[in-house]
Each structure stands twice: as C-alpha cells, then as structure tokens.
Image (cartoon, rainbow, N blue to C red; front, side, top):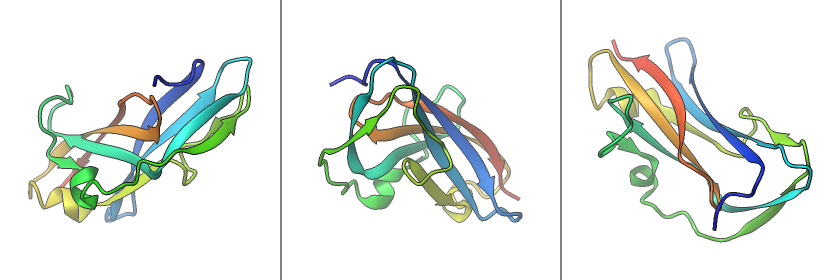
Length: 136
C-alpha cells in the first residue's frame, strides 16, 4: 500500500539538553490535498536508522529495531488528516528519542551521525532527518 496521495512527510533531528542528553528524531506530516486522507498507523512511532555516511546506505550503525527487538505490533490504527491539516514534528505522534550514550558508545570520539526516519504509517517513505555531531 502506498502513502496517501497529497501527504507530504519531512524528517527532523535535534539534540536535546546542554550536555547533550539525547537526540530526538521526528516526522511532520501535511495533507496538501483538497480531500481528507486516512492514515493507517501502527503502535510504534517510527523506525530510525543512524549511518556514518551522508549517503545513508549499507548497514546502519544503529537501528531502532535492534533496540526494541523489532517487536512492534503491526496493527492498523486508523486516523483522519483533514485537507490542509498537519501533524507537527514536536508532537508525540512520530517521535523517537535516543540517549546520546547509545550512539557515542559506538564511536567514542567526535563524529557526525546521519539519521533516517520512517514513520509508522502505511506507505510512508524513508526520510532523511538530518545530521548531528556528537562525541567528546
């Protein structure tokens, strides 16, 4: 099943805390069509992958499915998105926070990480969410 026509997705990444404490990866959605669309979502907010390269290809260095054991139930939750309506990136709908310690532990020196997010919406695309530099 493809993504609903007229829905635009954007990925976002930001560092939280001054130390920093965690990285928040999220998705915003916007229904540009003239008609309402029905979204079919699962119980997971999103799947996030972290890469060392801006190409975001090959095996990721971190994958949220490894963290959760891939045990998100594939049930369909129906919700409507009216014409012109959006879901902001700072809502809890499609957000995943990753403790910096999970990422920096992979490479204990400063490194840039490249994030990809796939919202748990039927037909949603993989989205480049941005990049951040972490490490000491």
